[in-house]
Image (cartoon, rainbow, N blue to C red; front, side, top):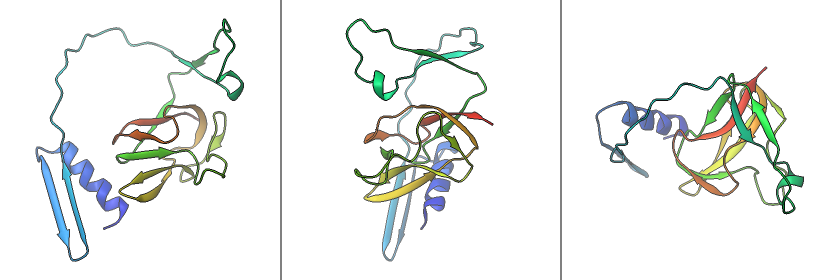
Amino acid sequence: MNLKEIQTLIRFISSSKVDEVSIEKKDFKITIKRNEPVYTQAISAPAPQHQTFLVETPAQATPAAGTPATLVEVPSTTLEIKSPMIGTFYRKSSPDKPVFVEVGDIVEKGQVICIIEAMKLFNEIESEVSGKIVKVLVDDSKPVEYDQPLFLVEPV
């Protein structure tokens, strides 16, 4: 079973009323379970025209006391690149290698932008859109959930 088939199963579970699917083959077994729904009360508010995000550059990562952070206007046309699976997010292929993408980089559809480790397998995640990286939403080596936003991209 390959990554695309696993992703298709996950999408099937999330869009159907099925709570669990198990597949077992000669040398492979996978079980996908739906989490119990969490009910919250939604309060409607007017939709913002623009979103403001705090963007830290490496020089700002450890600001001096009293130094204000830089606010950057992010156009409402930005797109999210979301995690196709549950796992651990990595910005680079190994500790001694450079990161795949930085804020400000232009990416092409199909370009590798990060790695997600799931069940001891390192899966290269490719960009679904072409554009400019506006913000990295997940810290390196942090766990991510299925469909969690990883990057904000401004289409070009």
